[in-house]
Amino acid sequence: MDKLVIEGGKPLSGTIVIQGAKNAALPILAASLLAEGTTTIDHVPNLLDIDVMLNILRELGCRAEHTGGTVVLNTETAHTSHVPESLMRQMRSSIFLMGPLLARFGETQVYQPGGCAIGERKIDLHLQGLQALGAEIEELGNRIICRAEKLRGADIHLSFPSVGATENIMMAAALAEGRTTISNAAREPEIQDLQCFLNAMGAKIMGAGTDTITIDGVQSLTPCRYKVIPDRIVAGTIMVAAAATRGQVTLQNTKPAHLSSLIHVLRRAGVQIVVDGDIIKVGNATRPKAVERIVTSPYPAFPTDLQSQVMVLLTLADGVSILKETIFEGRLKHVDELSRMGADIRVDMNAAIIRGVPRLYGATVEATDLRAGAALVIAGLAAQGKTVVEQIHHIDRGYDRIETMLSRLGARISRYLPVPNN
Ligand code: EPZ
Image (cartoon, rainbow, N blue to C red; front, side, top):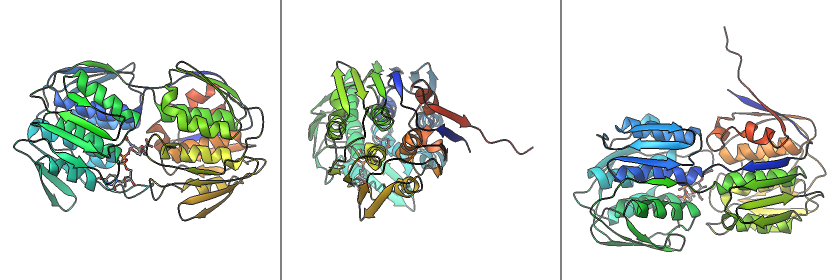
């Protein structure tokens, strides 16, 4: 398996343009199934997860090309609504194909996506939402068969503001008969981007970004061309890397409003942040200050997807910080790896108590999930000496050649491919 080798201790400096958002592009690609014809989506990053989604769409009969950041997707030839188990297991968020497939074909067959390194990843809220719209759901082992002669609008309350469940319901309700309201809906920017995309295809959706979304079903939707928002988690990852290496980095093509909770935390840590339109400048010449208490919660609160990255900054801070993970029950696995680099972290239930140390030391560490892997790269950049990060396929799911991105900012980082056994 590929590895990343990092020679730490060098401050990042320079300018970087942020890639399109993985977590907006994935549901938008799925939603393209709702309209027959050719949809074009710009600003789609080259990621393993995007490749998996395109392979699933091809398996369903679509024609898909991804060139130079643009996906051209012809859904006219889609002829089945059964998603292969092997492909579903590669990316659990493919569960939000259920909504568009059900709306287009009247039935779909998917598989329980199963848990992962960060948690159980239940889908009960997805299934409850589709049932409320009139779907009949049959679970045979890990196979899920979903049928609906006609989807009808309903008032749906989510017991938890699940991002994926909100997206699945929005997509299914777009072609349902009548009005659907989703209360306690997720408010993430990627939900707002999905609403904009669906409305560009002729849907009638309002309220994304608030906790109540209203969808008035329409007869049909029309293919369109659409550009995906910038990836706030990739931007946040770079911002933390700049702060942790005491560098000076300018990020272009960002939406600062999507990062306000991170900007607030970094400023509390003493990091200099300047916002100017779609540009964010991050500078940090001194040792960061500890941040007393950070709790991950649904947007617009501090995002779980930046928890592991900020933890690295706090391991180097002057003082004791507490970082509490409330979204995923298994999202503290990077603590063990950071401890091997000299971090002083104690875990109590779902909270990490982080006592800052003057420096980290390079080591061989293993990525356990996408964002934990990105955090270990940041730790390697800040550490003294050499760090080898293994299992980096996790990182490639969400970062478009992370070593190229960081090398352009002066990092000493290379990807090593395994030597084939000949
Ligand atoms: C989306 O996952 C993102 N993925 C995740 O990003 C992100 O961490 C998460 O939202 C939270 O912001 C994509 O958008 C592709 P949820 P999703 O449904 O939709 C529980 C990354 O690193 N839950 O909001 O799966 C669930 O177990 C990834 O890019 C139920 O109980 O997140 C979890 O504890 C990781 N029942 C919590 O809600 C359900 O039916 C959050 O899940 C659904 C979810």
